[in-house]
Length: 270
Image (tube, rainbow, N blue to C red; front, side):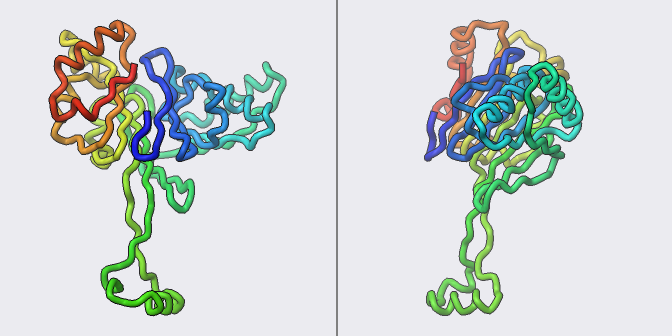
């Protein structure tokens, strides 16, 4: 799907596979599978180290090496870095090919500057193992109010004198939650303001207990409904549905229960 010049590609189903990318931003989220067309994306942000989110990491690395491309940069929770290094060494012995990549450990609150225009911030989520969400900010320069009435030449001269005439503004473009109980979303309110929010909604059936779902780091449709008035997002991608229900059943439940305030903005990704 596309929204305001950004394309969202991927798929997510609980315990099966999760992988997303935004090609215009040259980044992707999670590596449960690696479609051939995704290989050209150089920057990947891994939310956590469960296999359905990370199993294809060696595939990406090996394919880019085989195609003589630059090694990818993979950002992942700091606690997962050593294990992934061991994983790559094991595959290197099995495959008899190098596994060149840059693994960057990330902690909650870290910011990664991908370019002058893009910054990715990591934030903590609530799952059964160390996990992160990511928010992609677009940075722009805006002339400070005190200089609005000056001519272009005057502004130029002030800038050349070493005075900063602009301030930075940030626009939250894409938020990615990975797997998390709703506490992960509530703990980082900026995610509610991102233009595009990709979130999990693993469970939708009415007979599933919230206490158990939250204990194992997941979100229910009821959690989304309870927070309906907090979502300022222009697009919400709901994904990572349980395999217990057929996709048609999931769609019917969501269609029946979703509040009108979210109906036009929420995409059930099946």
